[in-house]
Length: 137
View (cartoon, rainbow, N blue to C red):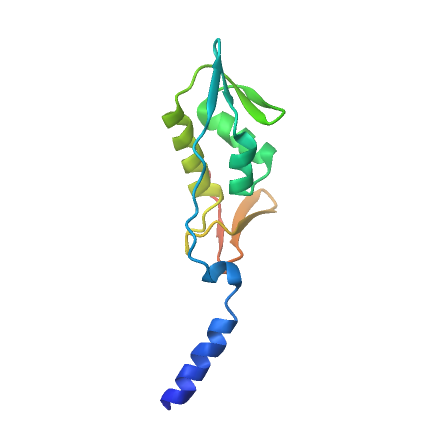
C-alpha cells in the first residue's frame, strides 16, 4: 500500500467527521444551587442545568422527582421539591440521569437525542451514530 494514498485517505476521512466530534471540550454539569424555605427545597439554577443537559423539562422533572422520591414542580426558573435535600444527593441524582439519558455509552459525548419507538426509548448519538435502548433502572 502506498503511504501517500494512506495519508490522502486519512485526510478525507477526517474531513467527514462532524465539527462537534472534533472538539475536545469537557462536558460539565452545573452543580445545583439550592434555596431552602421551611421544609421545601428550590433548585435555583434549574434552567441552566436543563440547558446544559439539552433535555425536555417535563422528561427530566418526571424522572428526577421519581428517583428523589418526592413531589415537586417547576415554578418559573426554579424546580420546587417537597422536603429538604442536600446538594450532594441532588447532584448525584442529576449525574445518574445524565449517564442514563444524556451521555452516549459508546463515545461518552452529550450529543444525543431521545427517540421513542412504541413503548421503548432509544438514545441516538449524533456524534458517533450509535443507537442504544435506554434501560430504566
